[in-house]
Image (cartoon, rainbow, N blue to C red; front, top):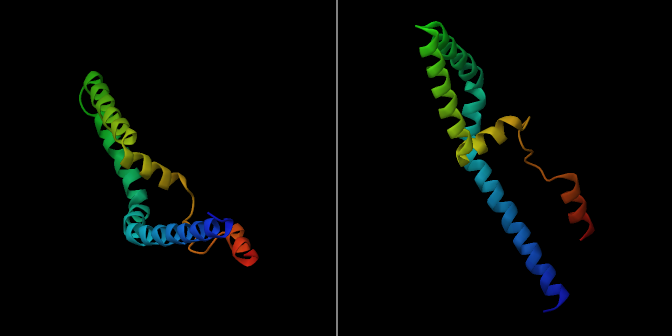
Length: 110
């Protein structure tokens, strides 16, 4: 194969990747928009539930409840969905819909 053919295949693969990434982002926007909108309510609600666990009943029972809730949340975070959700919440700001400056430079050169 020639270098020209290899470059063309890479260009086609890069264009396909960009198109699929954009399509995935469009399909998943509703999920992340909803989570960002309800994030404060989820934080306050989880704090209230934790307070209810601790303040209700005996300390021994509250400790078991908190440990059970922590175990369930850690199991969720170990799953692939939990990892994606954690990565999304840790990423500040939304991904840009325009190309990165480096990508634009590459397009300008070739």
